[in-house]
Amino acid sequence: MEMRKIGKTDIQAAGLGLGCWAIGGGLWWGDNDDRMSIETICRALDLGINWVDTARVYGFGHSEEVVGKALKELPRHKVVLSTKCGIQWYDKGGELHFTREGHEVRRDLSPKAIRRDLELSLKALGTDYIDVYYTHWQCMTYGLVPVAETMGELMRMKEEGKIRAIGASNVNLQILRDYEAAGQLDVIQEKLSILDRKPEAELLPFCQEHGITLQAYSPIEQGLLAGKAGDDYVPSKGNVREGKTWWKPENIAAVNRMLAGWRDLTEKYHCSLANLCIKWNSMLSPDINVLCGARKVSQVEDSARSLDIPMSQEDFHRMKKDADKVISMAGKNKKL
Image (cartoon, rainbow, N blue to C red; front, side, top):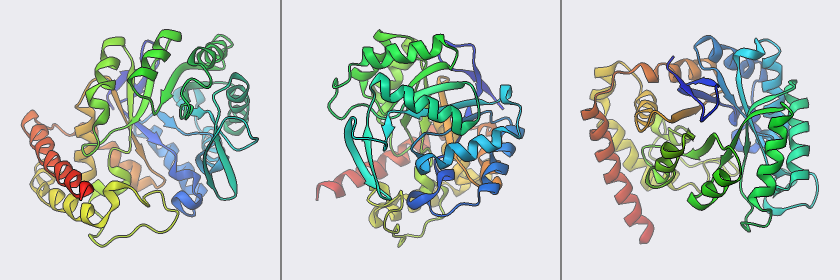
């Protein structure tokens, strides 16, 4: 597995990471087999995927608990572990983010809140340090908690040895600049797929200039780019795909037509459609880590093959051109 350095740190991680949102289950993802999830995490490490990413809010703590159980079966020093803070459902602090499963979930990046999140995460994960600690979402009223205050607390955590690297998720260029100015930011986590390339315009160039890793999540659009959803698929109420642009019937059909046109590429490279799209993401920049969700061994085994594909630049640009047509079509439908 190809290794890439995380930001300015000495942490080496595989170019592919394991995302553990689905492992949290709940209404977002449905019931889970926790033993299977643990086996999936362990299998990922066997395959060279050493970066395991979770968050405090995934499954309202359940994902961290499952990851913690897996860590007991693994050599801790071989795992690059990341989790996230700033999303809490414990009190009325911060600003309302959403309500779900009886919880009022709020964004709170105050030093007090993220310190509490850290201690809860350390306990749930059964470890005394986190390799990469992300702020999950920024304040809805930007500046309500100054970035300097949040970053100051993160830097103290780092000095204490409780975290090794600082990350920020779901940011824009101004927020990214503010984090970079306030301390050492090593990684951001952003949604990025061949169908959703917003970070490519501003965030990725900034990261490349300042030595910041971009960890890309949802590279196969929560399963759509695996090519297994029928044109008439409708997400169930509460499902993570509900209301998402690419999961609207007309867009599913258009994406499926695009994927059907790539069958020659799957034959050429002896791979799956998901492999093609994951590999495409990784080729955007050497500063990218591609985060792939999995809760079954078969899923992580398939994802692990992606970076070994010897995709040509010609095929890379062909896929981009095809996706641009679908993106344009979806944009026109949105305006109607």
